[in-house]
Image (cartoon, rainbow, N blue to C red; front, side):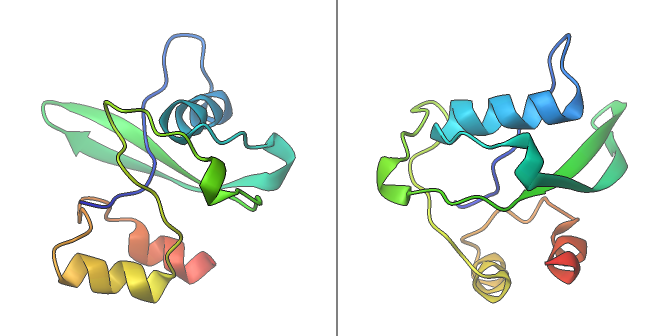
Length: 108
C-alpha cells in the first residue's frame, strides 16, 4: 500500500532533524531545511499513550530515478497529486491512517 514518508524522533532530535533523517533513511533524498515548512502539529492518542505528529512540506527537486529505498520499509515511490491520493485512498491502495491529509491538501 502507498503512504507518506513518516517516522519518529529519537533522543536528541527536534522535529526538523527527525524529518530530514527519516526521509533520507527511507528514500535517500536529501532535503534542505530552508525549503521546508512545518504546516501543523497534531496531538493524537496512539495506542496507550499520546503522541504528536508534525506535518512538514518541503519544496524540493527530487530525481525519482535516484531514489534508493530502505528495503525494510519502502518498495516504491511516485509523485501523486492530492486528487490521485484521494482516489488511491478510496480504492484501498493508500493507507488511510493519516487524518491530516484533508488539511494538508488545503494548504498546497
